[in-house]
Length: 403
Picture 1: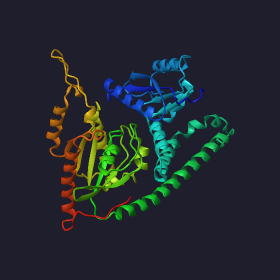
Picture 2: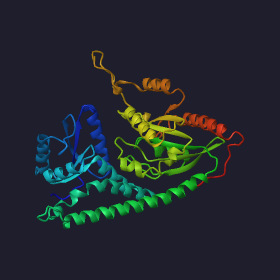
Picture 3: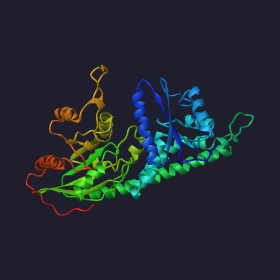
Picture 4: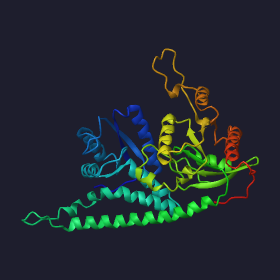
């Protein structure tokens, strides 16, 4: 097997009845952005049209041969092949055996990014728990060379051999670590729950959205704070809470981890305590990158994830960010193909969404501070409505809050 080279990789995706070629290209572009975030340089994409992933090798034999020939070509230094869907233990084992390079799937790549981004003990424990949960069912492929040593007697009773003993030992170690991490996270969550109780009667607002839509940039703008913001996926993992004051109205604003298509189940489970900020918020600000060609699907991904986290419907304002980066291409008069998002001008999109969401949306550029006063006006109105409804006899002035 070649050494694992982080700098060059190929990406693999499938065209299926559920996702057409346009979608697969978009998904692979996102996978490439994930790879770049992890310090990996994608050099080529491979796609194949199948009814469903091949149960043994994910792709068909012909496509696998094509990928292998490219990987083995001396003109390339490919040390990694990344698949856009989660691979089964059998698929992982067979692909590594055939391609002789490191194999990753979308889930393991996201987990690696989270591990590299985690800063606090809380985030590190959450990511570690997710990694062990992902690793546990895949342990068998790590010990196949030892399993072959196990044997049995003439009676047919299969005696436990060195390989099986090692595998069972490793499973026990990981299960013990999972149990320990769950206990640690319970302790941390109790502390955070007490912190939330001590925040007094301030209205709580949570920023939510797809990853890399500008949540942290907007938070810095509203709070005049220094939350880390970068043009990378999952730039921030830890929930940050800051006090915001608009005129005489103070409220708490929290920045949460970004969502993404096919967010690993292990991560959703591990980050439930972090996402309590979303569950316990009085109002949500759903940030959308309107310059992204697939922003409507991203809205759907976030909405579905929020429904999984919390069934309770909350007041929500949709903030369409990055209007400074928005572009569109006018169709030619003789072009009879159906109009797509790329053909729709910004003003038409604005009108469409304003009609759909009424007063619950605003269009801004956090980077260029465009329409921020309009956003503050909307926030003031919405937060004041919640405050008056919950605390009709309290004024809006509070002591400073520190997270």
